[in-house]
Image 1 (spheres, rainbow, N blue to C red):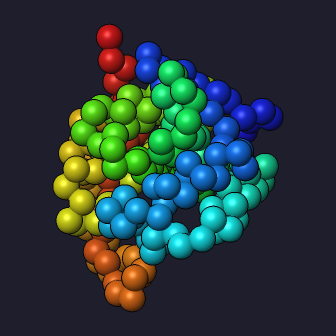
Image 2 (cartoon, one colour):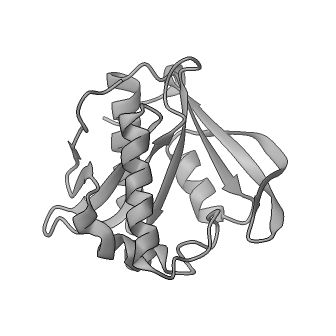
Length: 184
């Protein structure tokens, strides 16, 4: 796996390590009910929860169980979302992708730009062979994003998730290294 946290750049974005100094920016979108509508958590009501989340992301990276990048626009380097992988690597050579974005930046191509970059990183710089995503059936924008990126819907995982007091059916999507296409 990785010895140092990799910073990635796109035309408009910096994908970087999240630090405690990003706590307030992350709280701004993790406390938004709309951003967490399809998330397996209730909106955050205190900033300490964000600090614990950042600590958990750090621990996952240090223990080689995942990686989470902060998504920042190049012009100000303020975190407006996150994306990354959990259940990273060996022995199964697969990971699950996850992401969220501040509502003010929805439908602007930002998440597509960020995910293209971390997919390229995963398939070209690591041993990953399969990237999975699970999506609530009602989350049409996320499904369209994954399909645009080349993910294939494999089926429905019946009552696979339980959060917010109820069971949820989830679509499962995957992208294999052999099917991954780099855009020209």
